Length: 79
Image 1 (tube, one colour):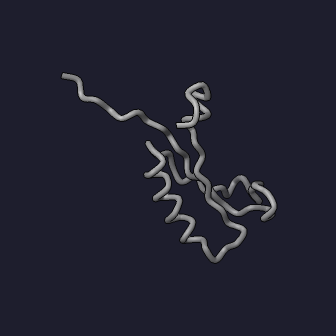
Image 2: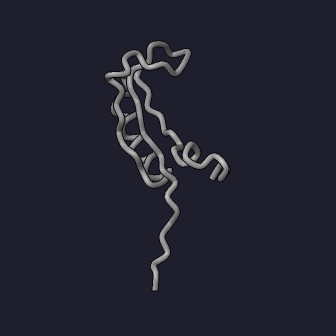
């Protein structure tokens, strides 16, 4: 019997220092922190929250969750 696996909805956690608080432009792309790719939003959110809390004293530093599954399969809609 084949085991049922949960559909992967890949998410990327990325962050770094922004050049301005008015936009989402990184100050130095060589210093962008690519934290990792996670199989679902809950896992990505947990890591994002940890990284965001570690940098709370730096107003210019931001972390983001990128919904890779939406980029890989845009026809699937917003899951």
